[in-house]
Each structure stands twice: as structure tokens, then as C-alpha cells.
Length: 366
Image (cartoon, rainbow, N blue to C red; front, side, top):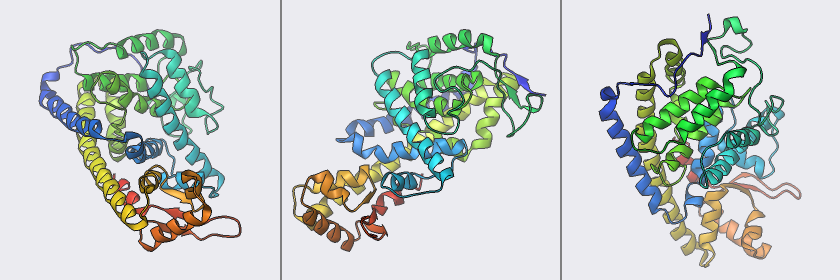
């Protein structure tokens, strides 16, 4: 029998005393990570690999099988079969939605209009584009094994006629910025409630996960929307869904909050190590490439490698606006030094496909 939505929100009288130590750990871990983010000189470049990895992992929870590496390959002109192309587009849409929503939310509160904008962006040109992108659902949906009937569903979200009321209540709570509730606990409640409401015909999980770092920025817990917990959620997928289900089954908000706090601790610590490794690699390659090429454009080459770690050989002369012959010399030197590797040799008029593999050795550990 399907569970029905019947939750009071925000929940009252959660006994947070049982997790007060974990709340402290989560805030301390997040604060250490935030301190590192604040020290970054060029965060757009340094965090670019993280953003793409989050897009990959969050989409993977929903069943996509493409990788960040394949996304960059496709953007460099590589051809894949249609199913892979669809997965890649979902990852690109996730990244675009995260960035765009972050820019908009930085200038104002969360709104129903922004949620619809996010959904329209997320679903543009992908599977699910026929499921009313940018519109809250007008029919009953349900959650369960693929192809199941509503009678076989494990959970039935609220009926369409009460969506507006629930969403307005949700947005009001999400925009509450007082100090009476710990920001990470509030983020946990926001994510769970969004998933329970399930306001769209498709894409609810991804929108709900995008809201987490955006909210933490808005509460001032982190300087940029760069705490991504999809890696933890993917690694603990069964527990993730079970904790959400237990809210409906038992009203167990505390169990969910405890799981979410553990995710924040784990991902803050993992991301701290990951970003430190990226910084160390960036500084090391900046020195190596400067010594190797003896050019003041070395920094721009390093930035390109981190921003676009898979690229065509002719991309360098375009980015640096230098002669093709000079760019070719740089490419040969970088290949000879093992800084970049050739994934595909040149063929006819198609330049070689190159990869900055040292970056993948770091990000793929996440």
C-alpha cells in the first residue's frame, strides 16, 4: 500500500538534543571548508571541476551513466550514441541550472518563479522535456519501481489541488533567515520537504539537491554554492531513500536530519581534501608550465586545463589568440612533458583530442 503525504511542515518539536554533537561537527566541518573557499584567488577556475563532478553524481542518482570526462569530450566534438548524448545533456543542464539559480538567488529570496525557472532549465532538451518543463504538476504522481501503478507505489505525493498551498509554505520557510534554527538542519528540512511535495512531473531529486548549496549560501554558512553532497547520497542511496520514506511512514524527521548532518560532515571533509589537492596541482602545474614554455601566458594555459580538461589541439591558439605554429609548439612540449596526453590522434581535418589526466586522478576519487 502506498504511503500518503500527511506531514506538518515545518515539523514541530524535533528532539535535536540527540544530534547536538553532530550539528556541531557538521558546522565545524563546513566552516573549515568555507575558510578554504574564501582563500581561493580564482574560484571560478579552481572549482570548475567540482561543479562538473557534482552534476555528474547528482544525475547518476537519477540513472544517468555519463561521466564528466565524457561531457568534456562531447563538448570537444566527440560523437556518442544517442542514449549517452542524452545523459551528457542532463549533466550540462544540471551545471547550468546550479550556476544560473545561484546568480539569481544571490540577488533575492527563493520564489516559486525561480523554482519553475530552474526546472525549465534542467529539463530543456532532455528526457522528460515532454513533462511540462517549468510548470508545477497538475496530475497525481507517485514513486516506486519503474512502471509500477499507483496502487503499487511506495509513496504518493500530495494531490495537485493542495500543491500551491504547500509550495508557498515551503518557500516561506526556506526564506526564514533567523538564528532560531541551525542552517544545516534547516537545509535538511528544506530538501526533504521538497522531495516529499514532489511538485514537478520529473526532475524533483535534482532540483532538491541543487537547493542545498544555494540555501547554505543564502544563510551565510558558505561563501559560494560549492558544498555538493550528491557523492555521499549516491554512495548511500538506499539509506537516503529510506530516511525520506521514514518521514512519511513514521514522521521520523530526526532520523533524516541525522543522516543529512552525516552527509554534510563527510562531504565537507572530502571536499576540503579535494580542493586542497586541486590547489596543489594548480600551483605545481603553473610552475612546471612556466619553466617548460618560458612564456607569460603559462597562467592562461593552466586556467584552460582546469576549466576544459579535455580539448582539441586547435583550442589553445583560439584561447590564447596566438599563431597556430606557436600553439602547436606548446602542445608538443606539454605532451612530451606528460602534462597532457593524447586521447585520439588527429584525423583528416579533425585535430587531436587531448586530456589533462592529472586532474581526473584527483576528481575521480570523489
